[in-house]
Image: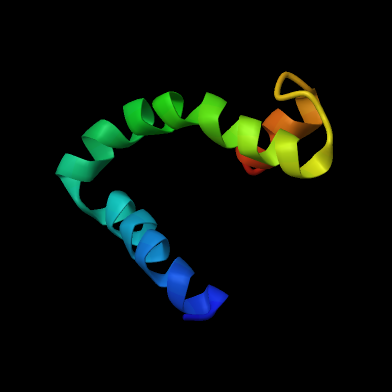
Length: 62
């Protein structure tokens, strides 16, 4: 399975989160819960601290 195939499910979920009222209601909480985990993964791959503003900005899509 290539990268594009692996990303298709998350992309579909993100698309649905914009259109489905139930997902829209829980999306902010899920985003908040995942922030520290994803920032840690980004930090690990970039040899930076997970508290680094650049790492947090990447995760938040800035």
